Length: 291
Image 1 (cartoon, one colour):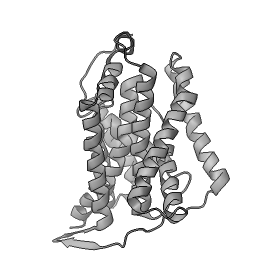
Image 2: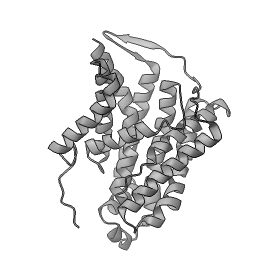
Image 3: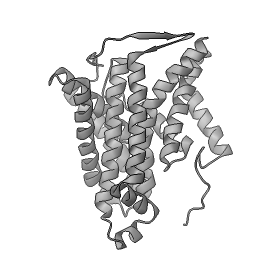
Image 4: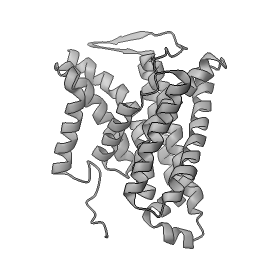
């Protein structure tokens, strides 16, 4: 029954990918930019959580909130300094800038903290719960609970708040939204803040789960979260969440059937198949884009 255990493990890992994928899908939905620095904001979240818990002696919940607030600020700074000046430029210019910001964050952290992995402070005593053929830990349950709460909260923010309505208006037509009195710059910055805060939370949770962080830890999860966003339907929040869980389970099932060395390849192969069959993603709608 190892495959069943791995399926359950994939559910918890998928929660992390889902939180990351939400940032990709929101930013793409509002300004059509693939923010490849998003995975490194997740890495910054892990290091901030490490600093708040180990050096400022915060408890997990205070550290989680402080990390989300700090990464939200980092996301706004990145948007203002790196992306806003290029908003009217070509998409390739913005994409190259995103890759540049990614390398800047990685190398800055490597310069100041070194490239060696660090042990994340264990603020929770690990407990295992046997549920028939499967076993789960309290940390896994915490990750799943926090992920679901944050995903539901994000959906409520987007659907029910005034700024959420502004985000949806800007994503449809930013010029028309501006004519209606919406502050487009503030709305885009708010979108970056939300996505970065959720990525920061994912960084803290993954540090707690794997007990190891390093400056390059955001590269692969960042790409997989982007895959998850595309798989679910990029620009669609529920699609990003669904894609995250699918990618997490695909990865762990690959391990269960003896393809652990090829689990990343399996994820990308499934993406290619999905895009060939349904280019808009699982929940996406095929809409012709005006040229």
